[in-house]
Length: 445
Image 1 (cartoon, rainbow, N blue to C red):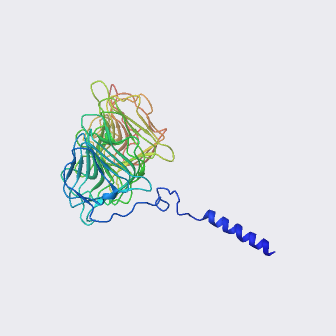
Image 2: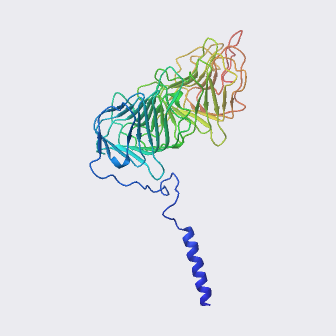
Image 3: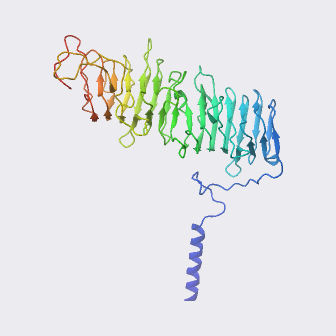
């Protein structure tokens, strides 16, 4: 009996050992099980840096901490390499600008730290200009982003604004925390590399990221919450249109806010024949009076494809803290609609704001005979007779005006059978102007 009890005790001890965490666990990115750093804390005064880097240079972990005491430029043709386990501390307001190459690639157990020499006083930014490159892996970048006229974020990539996106910023298991502005800023043509992944941005005083719309395709997987505003801010300044290459907006867990502090909330696709693709789960939140539209050129137009699902629709909505009908204008399709247009399983909410356009559909007032509309306000305005049912399985809700405005001259196209309309102040779908004669003496179709 004693032998049996001893054997049972042994089995329980073995089972407990197997279930208990070890000191060498391979953790997930969630943090609790993250690999333990093997880096030794730097001792001694470290190494100070204040001069431009004109030739290849390596900042070794053993020489740390590396203290940046003035603005540093990594010149074109030069590479600054920061070793695994190295710690870089940047003093008040100073920055590192890269025209050559910056390589700061740690490992899961030998991470790199880039932060403030005095955490209470933010430093400036890490900024890379194309054709230079910046590669960050298993690194934390923290306590920077001090306000400056030269950058919008703690990490910034800038490229040629007249070229397609230039993949000059690579991040792999990087944490960006406590920026005094945006965490990451993409300007002109500067973009993430296609293999960037596992980016965490938290604690930013503005938002995790600020981009131009044409630079959205390679935004990495990751976590973008815990900031003052949890959204990717999409600026629509000059050269911000989707007009240089096809662009895909991926669902990264937070909305895309269309329009920044000083820019309009308009997102334009075209006039060159490129496609804006919106994946299932994507949410575009438009600044007041914003518009999503395809721009018509002399021979082609931009294309918008939104492929939602029943459980993960693509949502077009208001960016207001307390959304209301008419907050933004809505979606406008130009005179010629490309056959590739598709809005499937989408939601268009809180649109129908003032469109500044009038007279392109019939007045939905049964007491007025044969008159045109007073305006073209609608959640979705179509200015050319549809060739297909490109709005399907979708919801239009809380429009301050019409739902779908057939704002063209021609035959009526009915979008009601395949879509749902809720709390629409005007017609669910309007009559277009007839090719001949007056508008019908009736209300909404």
